[in-house]
Length: 294
Image 1 (cartoon, rainbow, N blue to C red):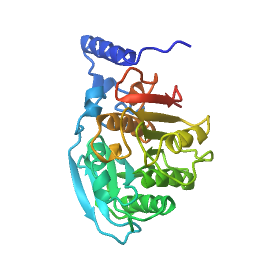
Image 2: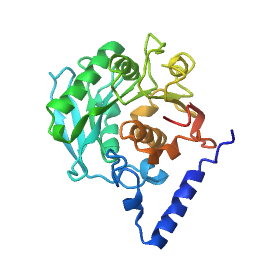
Image 3: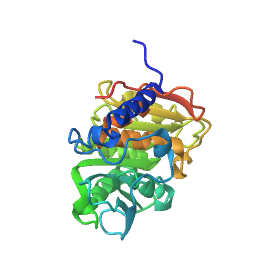
């Protein structure tokens, strides 16, 4: 089967906008999800520039969370908009010896795109991936049950992310909580690399020059062990090291936002950034995935 060029959906989208303008219909009013076809779609029609940008279309608020909730404290970032219904929620965990600061940038970045996000510290910087999985799930419980944003969260649309051992914890959390809508391990590390029982759509981010969790020993086996029937993808960052996910990264942001939008919000407008599989991007050394997405 011949795949369309990656830019084809965007050209088609632009043409649609022209035709809609000519007919007097706005793209927003015709967009799936803004007419009731998808009640979870949030925000305007996406562009690549918009999802790579430091901030998305939503203004955000924050809440600091103390320790003692099953994790070591953290920060909830949430859209202040109250006119579009509830939002999906994402918990993000740091890696071995890392504080919340290592993954803090995901909070405002993802929240401004239309998610309630909690970035956490772990109970101990020495915590194992399994302990981090429990902390991620506890963080989601806090968001849905106790946070200032709890009334804006759809408890049926939850996701997990994490760096290094937090990435290992992300995969374990997906195994423990199959009702999660998405999982994104970022240069993950786990003593177990087989996750054939995971049923949560999973996006694996790896780094070409990772000498702490080498791609061939961790992320690639993670991806390969996931069921072939699962919606899954694998991105290898070109020339990047283990700590690449700890700093703002437009490539990680673009594909993570697209994955979360597609599976947490069921927003097919973002599938154009995931399928056909991207090629020709110098920031990406390899990309694999299942297309089309279910």
